[in-house]
Length: 227
Image 1 (cartoon, rainbow, N blue to C red):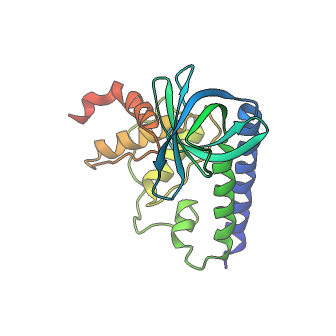
Image 2 (cartoon, rainbow, N blue to C red):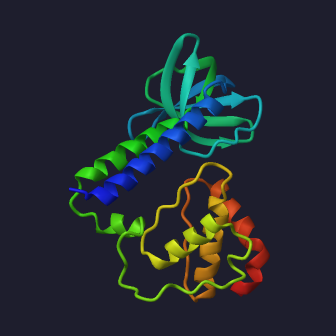
């Protein structure tokens, strides 16, 4: 079982997830994206129904975003598979027929936060918590000396971001959380910058191409250091 110190941290993380869920509900609950000319494309790998829709404007949601599809008083759940120009492809749980004249798509990003909270709560029952203790800086890694961070790498960061950079570089696994706009992408970019300056090779894996682009754009001013 997880000891008291980790339970306290898990409680804090669950509380932070609840705050993020509330913020996302407030932001997106009334957001409706009109869709038209829906047609069934076939079945996905998990036997969901793939539909293509036209929409009146570009959709800026990342791929794999959870959504609800509303047809009059009927709602069903699904995933945004992809969006390109003024068209989207959705994976829907239920068969809506070969054609759907019109529908509304509602982003439901809070569903991801609810799943994250469920997984955090399950951590209380795990016995192998070594990586978890490292990720929240309760247990030192094999590395004894603190990782070097160049002064110019963190010069423009606030205290929380600087601490996050040090924690990431000092531990094999780290979890950095913050509400939208608190500088998580900037923090990731500075971690990548320092690792590259230290001679390391880095892979940045993100759930969408747009999120990778943000990190790359933030690294562009220091790209000369990588050559």
